[in-house]
Length: 319
Image (cartoon, rainbow, N blue to C red):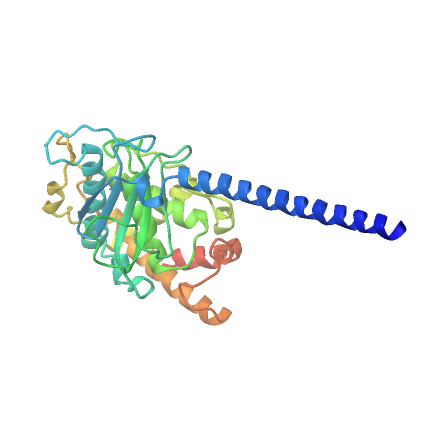
């Protein structure tokens, strides 16, 4: 009897284990299908953008549907929303200004970005902020008629940004120039200089510039408000530059409403930017050798580190 009872007990345990395994399998399958359903419910990354518009090195991705949609206005009837046309024209004007009027080397001509064949501009809604610029080349976003798989640089612009009133496209593009020249991403250097260089594209008749810090040590911790530092520094350094007026070609850049993109008549006070970026490039190269790092491949925390602030400021402020 004890043997028979044991057999029944073992048999009962066997079926209990089988039922438990089936329940576990059923649970796993249920979780899998729930996760798969959620994944399928999310749009494919390329589905965020329904249209593209390209000109020169810029390829703009945008949509006319949903949360990220740009306004549908199309005054010139070219089948591209005016918002996208205006983003493109500000980018082209800024690119022209940086290269021809300031003498800067375009990002795609720098060794760090020689493997890249363009700059992608992704237009999407921002809950906070208006734009972002990325320093690392990435795989290109899919688009119809795509023929190149080369890496690209990337900028994001808020779909709520009206370039006729905002300098965001020019600001973000200048960051790409900064990243091409040097590894330094401390905010007083990147944001302060980029904010000061918004002036040529700003509608403000009196461009706001806060007081300049009295010493290099005060720059640490500053960001956009460091534009006063660059304004003051330029005043001391631009005296040796040619004070010729801006080239007439600036008139070709106009928004969809006919208003000009570039709003200054002279450029000499911005000419020191080339010297600043070249000095930052020299310092970045020397620091790369000292640290045993490949130029353009610094870890992100090191790029943003304040440990170079004093040395960088002293390099910029040399006579």
